[in-house]
Length: 227
Image: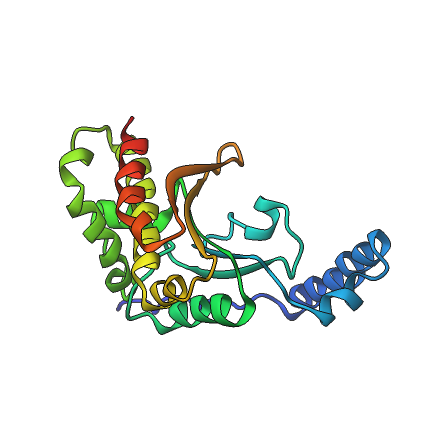
């Protein structure tokens, strides 16, 4: 007879309580020690100038990477930092950031070593997420002629870069950003990538502050990553 698989065991309650204890007694206390008004100021205002659209990867903590405190960076994350015109979650965050918070910069940030991008590159079958990663596969097919000329690891890195560029363009093509530009709002869209191996952020040459900037920015960024 086939044996039944062993059930997954949830973390002991004591572990969860320890995490809570450390958060309350260590992190919070240290924050107050450094800045006695930290939490008072934090609860009074959220006025970020930046929206970060990044990957859900736990190794890519947005605020720490850019050195901004809570309240200074509005963040939306999903697997492989994808921007889809039918994703109401991402679009709602984008619209709220621009129209309500008044952010001036939208930064699409990918990272080298992205598991979602690698899965799309390898045509891996992981379950429901395959449907989401189809958007990254579309980027792969669009640039396949370039990718096949590279070694596999370099090709995966290049796909991480190309994915950022394509998603930054998607941000520019949303009605939210297009309408903001039409109203004369100062919104600039950027494409960046983060290196897990060295902790450095790199610009990919995509910067668009007006509707007329999008196509030149797209072409310039593609040239930048292939130079």
